[in-house]
Amino acid sequence: MGNKIQFIDRLRLGFAVSVAKSVTFIVRSLRLGAASVLPGSIARRIEPRILELLSQQVKNGVILIAGTNGKTTTALLLCTILERKGYRVTHNSTGANLENGLMTALLESTNLLGTLNTDYAILEVDENIVPRVLKPLQPRIILCLNLFRDQLDRYGEVDTISKRWTKVISTLPAETVVIPNADDPTLSNLGQQLPQRVLFFGLNEPANYLEAIPHAVDSIYCPKCGHSLDYKGVYLSHLGDFTCPQCGFTKSKPTLESSEWSQILVGLYNKYNTLAAATAAIELGVDEATIRDTINNFQAAFGRAEDLVINGKRVRILLSKNPVGTNETIRVVTQSTDKTTLLVLNDRTPDGTDVSWIWDVDTEKLVERGGTLVVSGDRVYDMALRLRYSQKSPESSINLIVEEDLRQAIATALEHTPDNETLHILPTYSAMLEVREVLTGRKIL
Image (cartoon, rainbow, N blue to C red; front, side):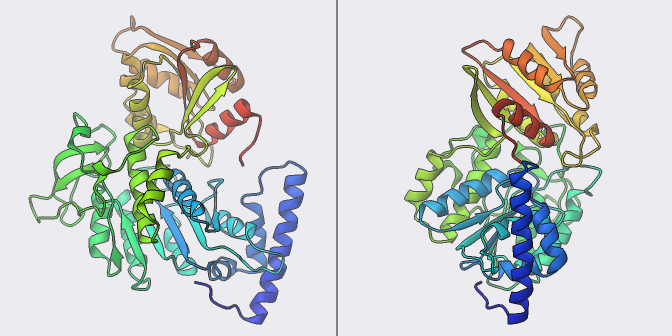
């Protein structure tokens, strides 16, 4: 935190920053994008140690947030809490969470000499690159949100990722604080093995147990001995209250009592995000009154339960990029009385090119409630077929509309949405960016 940089490193860093800022200016001036990745990529070629040199200058330390789901919401909430206390915070708010995106976010807060003037850096990090960035970042706090199957063409199984995390995190300084999800068996086990200071977050609300373990469950076996875990109840996927009858492994005790913390965002998955941010904020010395007030007035990040008003009608965008996340957004939709839903399935690099995961999604629950389902995206017919297979009979009350053109699909879905209801849109990541551009007329990335 706040280390001094050698003179020669300063010269090379200053040159890299100047070039990166010039690239940012050109890209944005020509409206070629948000310049959330390219500047970092170019700066890294000039100064390979740029991530380390910039993170060393963060006055109060780097907060790294990793996990399959919830990174952006958790990061934005924690960022908002700290900013309300007067801190200057650097955050990769566009969601560019690979190495070049992290560098670009830090570069945004530097001057032309490469001096970074910020109190905290809150960095969302793709779960697969965590082992590569921990050493240069030397984070003060690591938030481990969850591990689910995501983008099958890119990642291995969750236990493989967890083992890599454990190996690298254990080499960090003893003063590093790690905050894992107690309800995730792999992360609860991770926290129990680390030599650093570990705080846990999780739920203690049996009233919110699911009726049964979902079809898209990822890891219900003991990470210590491999025996099947006994679940008192599950909250979503494999997150819940568990013990191992074979070796005695059990859920770690959360630092905060979840029932004492409210949330303003929809979905139980957002309760986890709220508790993660609150646990980190308390560790950083923020008073509970500020934390609670921020939570109660918080607005969702773009595309994450984000509410918009389009042509006088309410629209809610619920990012749905993997089985667990989509099951949870479907739960939000089915708990409402609204009967029009737009599903947009893409298979681009940010989404993962393997879309077979849609067959692990409980789309039957969406179909059973009836109403109008509009489908679009690059893989529109894959999604349409999945929904057709979800019908128990051909006479189902579902009104399925297949529309290849996204702009027309959005218009059609809005037409079918009554004025007193909300249109729910469930897009994959790249589809979410397209949907928002159509609805708001502005690009994010």
